[in-house]
Length: 156
Image (cartoon, rainbow, N blue to C red; front, side, top):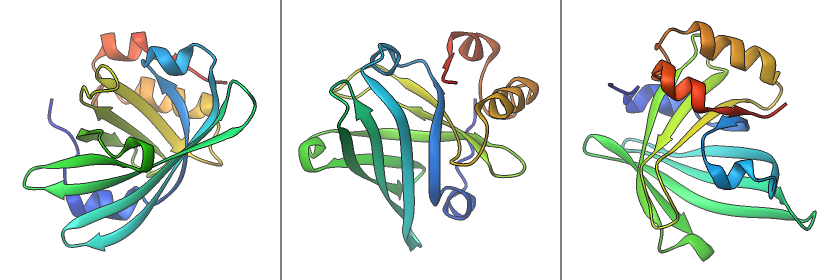
């Protein structure tokens, strides 16, 4: 399934703050991470390089930050952790973005930290229910097969 790997479009759409609406990653589903957000800032347009920060509330109630760089290399994005995640890297595919640019689906390949992961992100001010409906009605346009959509767990 081809992703939305058009670097200029990603550079236009991805910057900003996103919240995690759904995932199939078991670690996120065990309740140890809450209120996850992702913030992307465009560092370079050619080649496309984005600086990213993921934030969530940990089990102890404290905020946890993780930093990474997302860089276009030849025909795909390469994700590389920074700080405590400096040894972790992999590829990520933006499989689709809604027409309005407020819902995005990302597929992270397997890394040292775990299996392939699907993330459904929505702009920080978007409602999860609306994002879920948009993904469900997209009929594959956002890069998810029906069985992938079925295994997603949604955060309310």
